[in-house]
Each structure stands twice: as C-alpha cells, then as structure tokens.
Length: 332
Image (cartoon, rainbow, N blue to C red; front, side):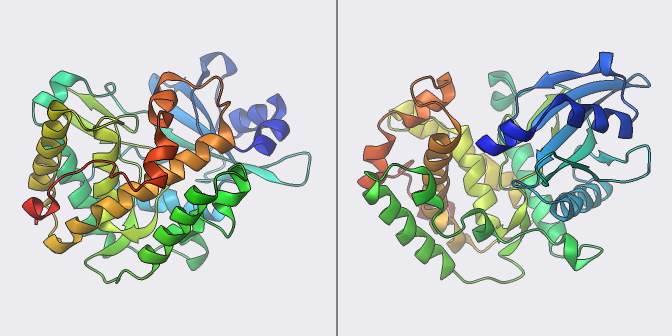
C-alpha cells in the first residue's frame, strides 16, 4: 500500500463507509489488505466484505467498471462473489479525504468456504480452476461496460513511466533495465479477440475459497485488459514454489499446468502457441512483485511469504533465471 494512503486514512472515513452501507460497527472485523483496507461484516445473518481503496490506487470509475464485470460474470455462470449496493443504491461510494483526494468504498458478498488445502489440490482443484478462468475469458469477449468512463485500464497502466525507478534503490540499474526490456517485448505482442480482453490477473489461493469442492473467486480489484495467457501464467506463478528447482516442485508445476489447461479448454479455445509466452508473463509478475515489495514493505521485517519470494530474487532477475523451467511446447 502506498505510504500516502496510510497517512490520509482515518476512522472518520471508515465510519462514513459503514453509514452508507448500513453496517453496524460491532459486526466489522479488519482483514489483511495489500492495496486497500479490507473488512468483513455481518448483516441480516449473511457475511460480506467492505473494501475501502484510495483514489491513488483506483478511481471511482475504475471500481464501477470492476463491479460491472464481476456481476456480469456471476450472472453468466462464473462462481464469483457479487458486488452489493449501498443503502443509497450505489455500487460505489466515494468518500472525501482531508487532503483533497478521496477513498472509494465497495461491498461484496463474502465467499463461502476457506482457502484451498492440499487435499483440494489433490482432488482436481486445478482442473476446476482452469475451467473457471476459461469461462471468464470466453465471456469477456462479449463484455462492454455501460459507459466508456468505466472501462478498466490496459495492462501497461500498472506500469507508468519510471515505475521501477520510483521504488527501487539507485543500485538496481540491472533490474530496471531488465524490466524495461521485458515491457518492450510485451508491447509488441499481437492482440485480437481470441487472445486479449478483460482478465482477473490475480488468480491465486488467496483470492478464492473452496467449499465442499466448489470454488468461489473474488478480489477482481486488479482486473485489466491484457492477454488471456497472462491470467494462465499468474495462476501458475502462485501455485508453485518460489524456488522451483527441486524435482518434486517441477513435477507439481507440470501437473498443475496440465490440469489447469485441461479445465480451461473445456470453456475456451486458445492458440497453443500462446503458452510459449508464459515465461515472459511469469517474469513480469516476478519483477513487479520485487518492485512492489520494495515500495510497500520493510525489507528488514518481511512476512514469511515475502521473505521466501525475495530470497536470491535480485540475482535471479539480473541473470534471467526462469521462474520455472518447463518444456512449454508440451502444453501447446
């Protein structure tokens, strides 16, 4: 989370959000949130999520676009946690901050179940997850926002000029150069209706719950226009070990991607040649996270997941070490 966001957020902003959604304060519990303030609450015997984001992260219009897509997907067979309106009947509630900026409040149904377990993965979860992502991609081909103001950003909108330089130390010139070269490569990739559209871009075990084998996907906050293969690459990225070199780790990576694509192809057709682009999108997320951790975290006091990810990461990026070394032609 950007430092300015933490500085301008206060209890009055939370109180305003609770009032607009008719939420009793004693039902609210703060959850972990990386880019936004996330709360869960109870109302009329049901569970919901309240998300409060700063305009530096997402504008009200972009949040409206996210909600329109989420509800469109849910209405067409994707198991996604729907958005719910405020007491005023609005999907998005802007709340002014003291410095002239604003926060945006939005609420969603709380998914049933819990984060996936090893038993879930052993029971074909990767196939079901692939089918859900395939369904999303098939549906996104016909999706249009109600107003172009609500159109979500293109993938490169997350990487403004100087993104890496802004948050990395000056000594990180090789990482910055690698990132610039990678962006240049991605900019040149072709786009068409069957390869590029609105995607989730953050499909991982923290963003879906499993309940008796049923998956519910949530947190579409990062959704953007990008290549479908990016979604597939991100599911792989988060399903495998940070240092994916041991035999058993490689075997799991291969098994996961094979199962995921089995499910994906039940819902959507993708030219197999796109799977050869997965290493580039894995590297995009790898460098992106490296930069964001520098931006948002205390490098001397990282949580276990971040610490594991950052171990030898600078060396791996600078020396073009693949995030995972698979024979991509096997999946074509």
